[in-house]
Length: 250
Image (cartoon, rainbow, N blue to C red; front, top):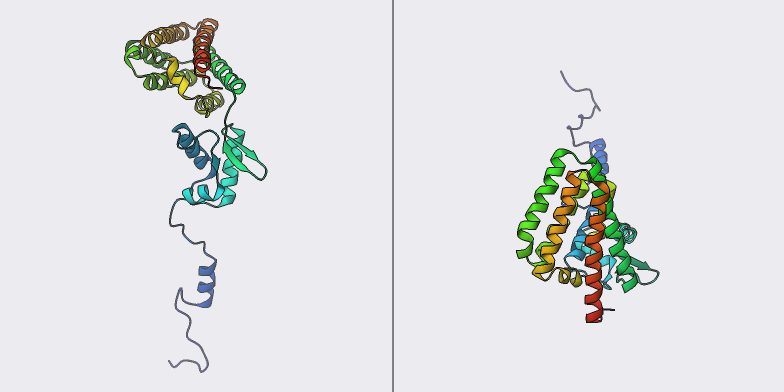
């Protein structure tokens, strides 16, 4: 049959004006991962913890945007999140800088850390499952056995791991998030944390005390567990103050 005069040939599939219009509206496929603000925030916290960014250092929006492959608007969101978590200070016309605590604020951070771990120990004694109690005790026994021979840095990391297990037994993600940030908060006196347990005698005493905390949690003695934690941190804080005074770290 012959074609009707004037009838145009139907456009091939995917090649007509409608297809082109739809194609123009289709979102371009991203060539690489653009991390969300919380992911970038956590990465910057890790860089602060690793002392890539130091207390008092300015964070430039464009440098961070280039580093993470995102817009400056996303970086502003990140910086406000970090400010709320206590890692940076944002000043008008100056931008964001890594916090630098004076001695009074440094003392307050230590007191908050002690209170949070004591609360976690109290809750764990009341709420931890048998498996969680076993894990707390296992880590405490390992700390008591190996702690005296660890380096100061490894010992501090081991105690943080143990407090993480205690937080798991406390069954509070909110408490765990706060405590994680408090442990990682930047400080111009960060080095003194390791010096507290630089001597083998101090590591021996501290590891025995943490074992006593674990024993109290396993037995369900919440008040005793919290009190023992407070005593550990009080001794550590006193030792740190002595080191700061001796080194004039103000």
